[in-house]
Amino acid sequence: MKDSNYLKEMNARSLWHPMAHPADSLANPPTIVTGAQGVRITDIDGHEVIDAVGGLWNVNLGFSCQPVKDAIAAQLDRLPYYSIFRGTTNDCVIQLAEEMRDFFEPDGLSRAFYTSGGSDSVETALRLARQYHKVRGEAGRTKYLSLKKGYHGTHFGGASVNGNANFRTPYEPLLAGCFQIPAPYAYRNPFNESDPERLAQLCLAALEDEIAFQGAGTIAAFIMEPVLGAGGVIPPHETFMPGVREICSKNGILLIADEVITAFGRTGDWTGSRHWGVQPDMMSTAKAITNGYFPFGALMLSEDIAQTFENDETGIANIGHGYTYSGHPVGAAAALACLEETRKLNVAANAAARGRQFHDGLKALEARYDIIGDVRGGHGLMLAMELVSDRATKTPIDKATTFKLQDAVYQAGAMIRISGPNVILSPPLVLTEDDVNTVLGALDTGFASL
Ligand SMILES: Cc1ncc(COP(=O)(O)O)c(C=O)c1O
Image (cartoon, rainbow, N blue to C red):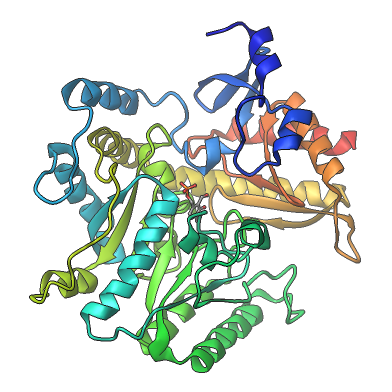
């Protein structure tokens, strides 16, 4: 590797960063991360901090999970690649599919379609949802409903069901036939309703209204995150997702749970759907499936969908979809090792306990710093603070202050993520009680410095 002076000088010069303005990356070069151990990352200057972002919501088992590293290395030696397009497969992906079937059995999901990541898993869900209705003889069901504030990746399908203009406007026109209803976001919503339970009912009524307006027979699927993540960590009231399930079932609409973040323990339960007591028809997963060590994902499908496709005798259920890296043997080996470690360490239970500690700590900070307008969490290790310049008017904080905060917190020992006016926390699920206190202490120092 070239020396640090060279790397600092070339930083952002010949690449464009995702989710960043190219000019901003040049003017404010990104932190160069060069190493990681446990839940800590080290930058090019040797500064070590707790990664309260968990990579990007994906390094659930931390950066030193040796069994996953060993599995990847061994698989690279044994079979570094082979395709699973019609006619061939590999031993790892067969075994993984059985493990996944077992893991997702309580969610009612029994088949897997493998992908290279979250956006691919969402795209696969949207495509197979339309095909499912065609196989069943309801070809008119082509539309998608989703939530404002929702995030479903950046492929054209996913971007079309996204509920945030930043990911949509520059790339319009998007896919036709996608409609968003208000999110159950108690801090800000068009109903001016701050009670989460009443708000959930209003959002459900809006969903029913949209279905009636569009015509149920034109809608293929409703897609939602069980706890909205990238949109600012928005946990709905406990009645919301069960209500969505009921409305979808009543109207013949598939429910796609986008669990790219929430599957594998982040909410304190093994899946976000299980957290709310709901069985979806499809579940998109990725990220923690390989602990972020290998790009990989899976769309899980219900038994009903499986039977519908598998019993077709006309040929219409032939799947004209897939990726070169669907079922990649190295990804599958990583996922097998990850599933084993995830269960062995019972990370869901730790996420629940540390999530409560974190939430209480953030609430205590909220009581001391007026800049914190809203604290969201209480469902495992996904938390956010929405920052405001004026609590009474809820005026969002300016960008400069959020970046100043991020820098101060980093200097004080924790990497946090800034997204608009939100501070987002999604640390590894193996975080200890002391680690949580360290992050809270760094946040305190950061707020005090503003
Ligand atoms: C809920 C959800 N869906 C889809 C995606 C897209 O995943 P990827 O970035 O792996 O394509 C993300 C990424 O954060 C996500 O949070």
